[in-house]
Structure formats: C-alpha cells, structure tokens
Amino acid sequence: MAATRSGWRYGLLAALLLAGGADAAVLPEDRADLLYHSYDGGGVEVSGPSLLVRKSLGDSVSVYGNHYVDTVSSASIDVLTTASPYADERTEQGAGVDYLRDGTTLSLAYTNSDESDYKADTVSFDISQDMFGDLTTVTLGYSQGNDKIGKSNDPAFAATATRQHYRVGLSQVISKNMLLALNLETITDQGFLNNPYRSVRYLDPLSALGYSYEPEIYPATHTSDAVTLRARYYLPYRAAVYGEYRRYGDTWGIDANTWEIGYLHPWRENWLLEFRLRQYSQEAADFYSDLFPRQQAQNFLARDKELSTFSSRSLGVTVSYDPGLHWNFIERTAFTLSLDHIQFNYEDFRDLTKAATPGSEPLYEYTANVLQLYVSLWY
Image 1: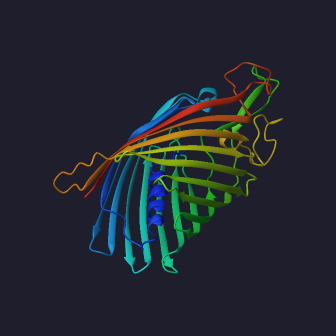
Image 2: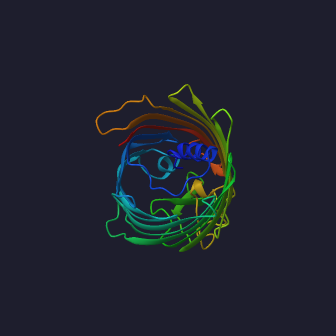
Image 3: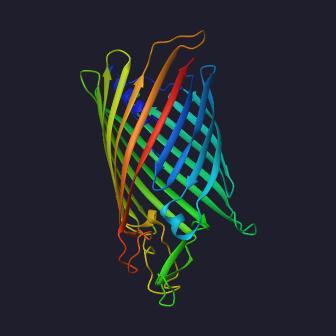
C-alpha cells in the first residue's frame, strides 16, 4: 500500500497554470528532493531515506538520478501465524532522461531494486505530445520488468517473473479553471507470481488447531486493466479542488474501485495546505479462501489478505512551507510534511492470533500511519 509522494504539488501546479492559460511543454525544473518516509501498521514498520536529483543539460535535455532505501521490520499477522518476525533492507537505484522538442517529450528510465531475496530491473519509455494550442496532451508509455525471486531459508530456490506495463493518457484543458485527464493501463505478468513464504490453511481434524498449512499456488499469468479519471479545478482565491476515480479488474477475478477527493489551500504567502480523503474497496480473487475444506482443494490456492475482499479508508494532510531562502546557487527551498491515517477492514480474512473454532475467528482489521518529510531545493 504505497502512499502517494508529492502528487498534491502537481495538482496545484496544473491548476495555477490553467489560471493564466496553458504553457507549451517544458522540461522539469532543476531540483533536488531529500525524503524520509515511514510506514507503521499491522505489525509492519518500513522507513528510510530517498534522494532525487534532476538537472537540465541545455534547453532540450533533463537527466535525473534517484536513490531509495526501505528498512523493513515485519511481525505482520501472516508472519505471526506461519513464520518468525524478520528484518530486511531494500535499496533502489534509478536514472532517467527527458528530451524535449517543440511539444513532444520523450522519456527513458531505468530502475534497479535489490533486497536479500528479491531483485528487480525495470526499463520504461514514455512519449508525451501537446496538441491544439497546448490544450490537449496525449501520452503513451511502456515498461518491462524482470524479477528474480529467491528464498532466504532455501538457497536452492530460484524463480523469475516478467512484467509488462502499457499505458495511454489524455489530458484536456476544459476552461481556464478546469483540467480533466483520462488514463488507461494494462499490466501483464508471467512467471512465479506468489510469495514463496506464504501458505494457505485447510481443515484438518487430525491437527490440534483443527487446520494445517500448505504452500500457496498461483497461476503463472496475470493480466490487469485499470481506467482512471481525474479532475482539477482552480478556485478564485488561489485554492484548488481535485477528484479521482479508478476502476480496476484482472484475470484473477479481482474488481476494485478507488475514490479520492482533495482540497489545496494557500495560506499567507509561504504556506500550502492539502486535505484529502480516499476510499478503496475490492472483491476477492477467484482462488482465494481464508480456510479451504481440505488439502489440495483446487488447482490454485491463495490466502494472501491482499487478494481477499476488503476495504480501506484514508485521511491525509500535507503542509508545505517556502521560507523564501536563497543561498548562492539555490534559487528556492521548500519543506513539506505529509501524514496519512489508513483503516483496513477485511471481510473474509480472519485473525488467527485469536483462538476460536476454525472459520469463526474474528475478522482482521488494523490501522496504519504513513509519514513523509522532505526538503526540496531548486537551483
């Protein structure tokens, strides 16, 4: 459940641009962002730093590099019931280049992610074209990822997965105050797609618990489609409102809906406030069950709570402050604090830390807090 990073800034920027008419395509600004992020919920703690630096080379090229670290400590409900708590660290390195010519922007990026039992490499290509007096923007993109999966308690285990991501988007200036955007995505996955550590449970009258465990088995292919509609509206007193709806469906039988609304408000000359509310709900995968009737009950088996029927609600606030500081080559600075509180409720995933007759344990729920603190420098 990754949290959004700094999308609120882009929402306000779009609204501000619309207030004075759309500009031609431009390269991203030269800037550096230093981020500290933290997630705490459901027995999982994730934290670490990230550094993103971007620099233009002339008027047509912009390059960037990113270094990101996650330190993970997990005693989640899955770990407590089938394994031992663990700690791990994931590092991610990324680099990219944008090339601008007239109203066309070409982008190429590479990302490498590395942890003790999982390695991933991803290459992405995107093209963006402004049309009709820069009032319409069309984007096309493609990414391919190649993952290598290991298992810390089994050195002989080795598996791979390939992921392809196709995307197309259209944004349209409706008026000087309003922008609409429509995005379509298709993702295809092939290979080993489940977690090698995760198990499912099945009824077993010979077990003292009344149930036993066996490994998960997922299909070797997975295709998902998503459509997202976004709207931004600039208010007369320099504030902005936005809304988003996303519909998701896949070949595993999961259907999901996401709603989000937000409000951005400048305060005095140096402060920017954002308030947002998000609602997510999904139906379970076809081969998911909290408790199977017997061992090897079907071809595919899953008990990952993220494939179950559940919903989440989040309330977030972001505060950004620009002190107007200038140091030598530093043209502008900004300090940002972002907080989100999330409530998860599962409808068919049960809490096995509470003793009860198999299948009648209380349904699982938990809350999580996401914190992001970052400093931005323009130069």
